[in-house]
Image 1 (cartoon, rainbow, N blue to C red):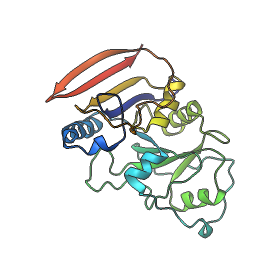
Image 2 (spheres, one colour):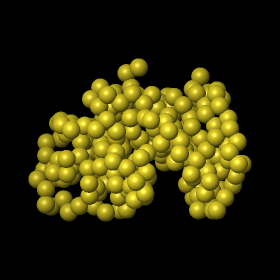
Image 3 (tube, rainbow, N blue to C red):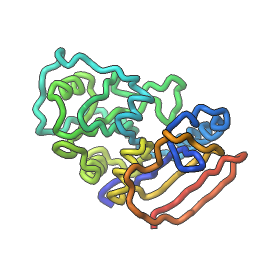
Length: 232
């Protein structure tokens, strides 16, 4: 395979939603714990999230003053020398994430996230000063498209340059849908909480295509379903 094996690992409501107020219900506490436990157990080379998810989980909306950084030529990828082999891969099309470290600092020290080396996946439609900021922070970045991120090209580079063999795709809806539409979801790892989401919650895949999966594992953990599907 010329790209990493992709496992879409998500916690959902009964009606297949992944964001919304339902996540903060007490009935979701145990499902959340199961989700993070599985994230630690899968031993992937890293995890992939879209910009909104990375911002909500890690950067908190902070953004650097780009006037402090010199523009950098957009014709080459930038890879630091000391690659860790465990990555937090941000699909950040226009370079809107602000990082204060080149590694994830998880407040709980969760080994599924803490210490993951940040990799930015960008389009060429990015402020050249943002590249200067990333290089000053020693954050690796790769280009995968002119104005939008080409998922297949990005995955090819993650395999070839970073030697990623297995990656967890952890949302949100837009990036999950982008992967699904190019048949780049090899396995589904779902923790289904025993709740129905509200009307404003987002689905597992945004703008998805029809695809077939086969159920390979199902477990009931105190009312929370743990499901694994493999693409046919």
